Length: 202
Image (tube, rainbow, N blue to C red):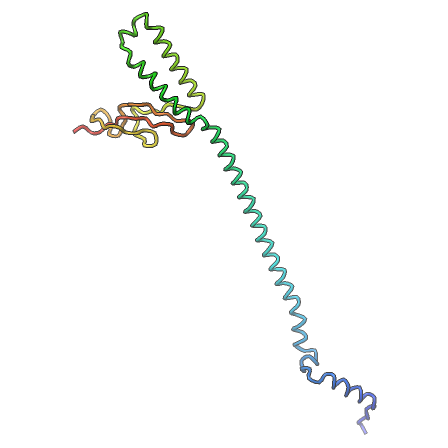
């Protein structure tokens, strides 16, 4: 006979193993696709986790760079504010001193020509003129300069037109008269020049 009888012990062992596997899917019994899929899921989860960590790291690096740039901008603004405070600290005082300069110039302009030629007045007049020159020198040392006006086109940033003067000698919009001098401190306007502007004669 070709069939061999199984060992009773082997039969009992096979029966016990079959009982233990009762209810387990066939795919898992044979080590098929289910087992293979479980092994593949672990590397996939690891790759996702690594990608997420790399994304978080990149975002953190961007946040650090942004914070550094913002800190540098704040520092630059503070430095500029400090420089402006030093540069323009005398603005109020300088604006008040313009009145002194105006009065000195008016005083000199009001002196009649014949009086200027009289010997007894020359000392006084020369003293007033010297004081005006000294004041102008102090202005220049502190960055205070007179605004150019006559002969130039009207600049609303530096000039204030008070009157229009009909004339054919100048292009319309050209400043032909200055009523009051204007001044700047550094690059900031202290006072605009009050001027008369040419307009086309009728």
